[in-house]
Image (cartoon, rainbow, N blue to C red; front, side, top):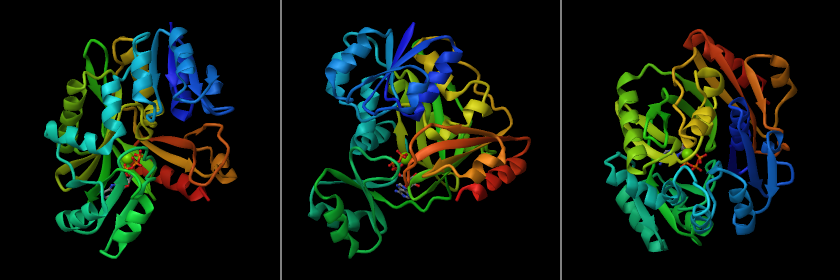
Length: 358
Ligand SMILES: Nc1ncnc2c1ncn2[C@@H]1O[C@H](COP(=O)(O)OP(=O)(O)OP(=O)(O)O)[C@@H](O)[C@H]1O
Ligand SMILES: [Mg+2]
């Protein structure tokens, strides 16, 4: 049994380590010279839209999955005639386009912030009227880590937003004055068995995930979030891990976006859950029984961005995951996970790590 993984970044690497623990071989495609996933399997070096490279992966693997979302759907559909690809390409299609994604949330009666499609400068003016300010303008495609976004705070910013992003399809979204951000990860196998992880509470800084903590004592929100994830999983006939990002305002949840893959806000599950999101993703696509998503203690995960400082390495708190990437400002290089006996102890440990990050 061999699994082919499209993308050799840290998500691929952690999937690869989980596969090794299950005794399964993995193979990757990635355009970079020495991607993180090279630590756990052979990498076919090619661009993601290289049909020859993808076919080489497909022909030597029993099943394919992806850790990277910006892969050509046409190429994937072509390859899916040779080998099964999970999560289903239809799920990826929604997540590649913010407008389609938001319309899917509407179809499934999952509440979301007010939004408008933007194809012209005029649409921007109309959106400001309809949604009110502030609003956030986002590219419909290719956004990650908050890139391709512009917050319009006052009418005078509309011009600058158009100049920055106007050469591509956009959406405008009402700015949500949320109390906090949550994510809910669910997993479904080929037989249709579903299991849901406890909620994570996530803090983003400059659009990039900074910390995730779980579990939370929010039984009603947990139930609502789990219901939304179930709707997505069933509607998409989904296979694998899916992450739904949510804004919490009082007792209400609004969907931000979903990712059809393992997710940064679930990295804590490696140490903090009886079965990690990576193992359960593999179990799902191999149609194995899903593992327990029960938590082990109070988990906290802090991303190491731009550099991993000597002070952080010297701390010796929790488990440091170094993806082996070259340092670059704003780049996710690793993360640390701590498991506390109580939420307070976990928060103290996360605070110490945060202080060590320069
Ligand atoms: N409408 C909004 N109101 C308030 N904050 C927002 C809104 N949209 C985005 N944000 C903030 O910016 C962060 C990143 O936005 P979003 O999830 O849309 O971007 P992304 O580039 O797809 O990020 P990623 O793929 O890393 O999750 C959100 O987690 C949130 O903190
Ligand atoms: Mg996001």
